[in-house]
Image 1 (cartoon, rainbow, N blue to C red):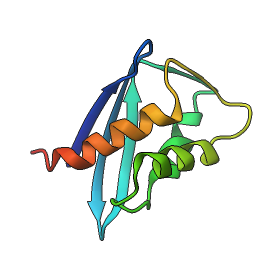
Image 2 (spheres, rainbow, N blue to C red):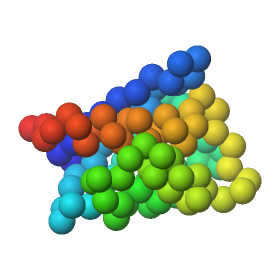
Image 3 (cartoon, helix red, strand yellow):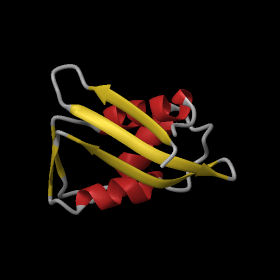
Image 4 (cartoon, one colour):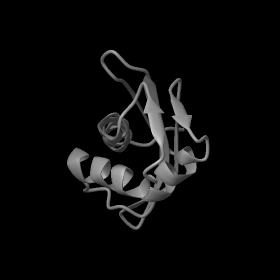
Length: 98
């Protein structure tokens, strides 16, 4: 991974975004943190929803992609789609990490 961003949601938990960029698109997206999801495999759906999006995507577009990519039965504790989007934008704005 060559980009890293973090966001502590007010009143919530830490969201961490690690990702790479290829051809102006997000790839190898990995969201992590100290939040909880039910079912556990919902994290894979979040990562998949973000992969392939343009690096120019704003927070609203990123959050919409996360929301659209989650099955209706997913429960998120301590985070929301908007918090994931902030972490991703911070990763994009941070530049490359070693």
